[in-house]
Image (cartoon, rainbow, N blue to C red; front, side, top):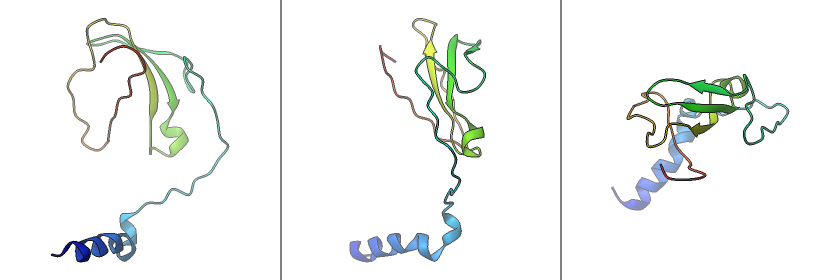
Length: 100
């Protein structure tokens, strides 16, 4: 397939199959959650392989299950998040301070 044909077909795909796209039209009032604060439940302390303090910034309650965003403070020196998989979710990390 030629590049031009591929690009045009790729761009047309969402319009030919509208059920592939889910446009979230939910609107509501904005909110701000400051550093070191949690939107719901305050500080959550996890206990397991390592100890963390988790502050939920954006909850599934806010996004109809579409997104969870949290701030995590690692309290166990030299240990990070164990190797794991999420089969139906994406996960990313953004390190603000130190090494991970």
